[in-house]
Amino acid sequence: MNIDSTLEFLAHTPLAMAISQGAMAFPMLECIHVVAIAGVVGTITIVDLRLLGYRSHRRGVRQLIADVLPYTWGAFGLALLAGALLFISNAPKYAHNTEFQMKMLLIVAAAINMALFHLTIYRRVGEWDERSPPPTAARIAGATSLGLWLTVVFLGRWVGFTL
Amino acid sequence: MNMQSVGEWIYGTALSSTIRDNFWVVPVVQSFHIIAIAVVVGSALVTELRIAGVVAPDESMSVVARRYLPWMWRALAVLLVTGLIMLIGEPDRTLTNTPFWIKMALVVMAVLASLGLRRPLLRPLSEASKPPAKALAWILLALWVAVIFCGRWIAYSN
Image (cartoon, rainbow over all chains, first blue to last red; front, side):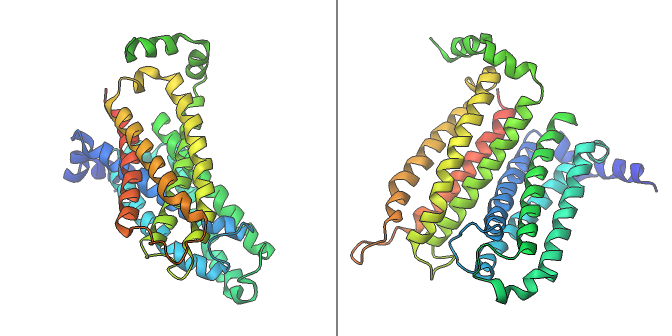
């Protein structure tokens, strides 16, 4: 079974057919997707800006991340779920859309950036928790995250115009 | 003069045809619109969850409001400008559109509630003053979610 037949199979599952043929399902999933994206970008921006040296409601980076990141993850899970359902409704077309492919790549890049941040400079957060601006490595991680997520929003919107 | 003729007049202006003739304007403006929505949602989420006692209950409400309310006003200004560009480019898509007008009514409610109820938090609460109602914090968050739903629904209603 190659990728294209898998995508066709996905788009013909009863769930995918219900989404693509129902009057309400697709727009409702889009609404949920946009709310979730606003949650992801809105909260991750708070952390990214703090990593760049902008003040937040918390002095310490560790405390700020503990306050905000659970909501980023919750919203990301919702965006992923709604996004996956939107995807299967027209799987072959989305999969072959350049903007969609780039969007997925940048989300993976954002995940790698976050993993690197947590595995390196964040391990020593005790040394710079309350310092502003934080060390260069943390500032780079914040700028990279912000740039990637804003580009993801742009690419996502372009998918709607190029599909 | 009804909305339809207002829309036709806007459609005929040079600015409106310039927006339509440059295919990239609408998607780019929409992307900025969504990013500004994210800033409003992020600001409202932390502020309202603080008031609801869920996030950072050990931090004072005025510190939280002072950090996030200015960002909300800036993002709302971006939303107004980008929204106007979309309206001028495609007036027929908005002015006679029911979800659009419901969205506008909800935006006015959410902005007035934020101005009236949240701006006073910028000054530290005195000992005597009552803390803001927690239920209202949840209602305000629900209001912003409803605004997003109506906004997305504009594309599906005529």
